[in-house]
Image (cartoon, rainbow, N blue to C red; front, side, top):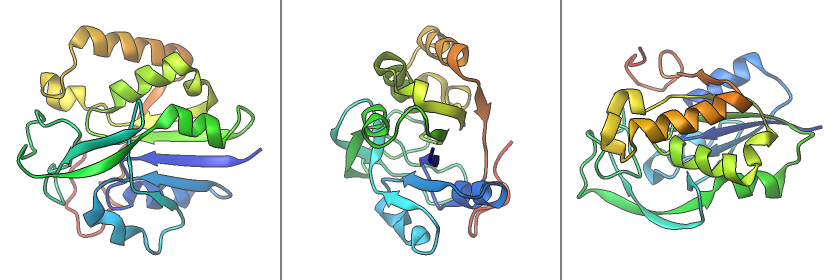
Length: 189
């Protein structure tokens, strides 16, 4: 059995730092598509995959926010804190398929989301393809509460997805920005 930590939306590496403080023997993988943040991973014990997690493979526009504070980047141009005219074309990956291709259900997988609203699309896809069943612990930030309809999802769809997710595995709140980020003000609430 392998022990795996998958960090979706790694930003500056704060979640990896937080996770390894309390866990040993884990292989760590970080998905972070913002090319400006890759430098923060050079000395961290994780495999950086410079792609956005999504429900299928391809390329997409990744709307850039500022580096720090609440200025996170997003796949959603409608998100309130991004400039829809400032984006990078990035690769996206079907997270569920990647999990099924690289791990098995006997592995102990901790999955963390910080993907600025994309968690709903990805989790819905993982429910449908069975890859959520590979996950033993699930953490993240729910961005519906922060941004509401600016991420193109209705409350009814969000509630349906999260109810189905929580039937299988509890989605637990996660924030590492408080004390693990490099040169970042404390922003978690």
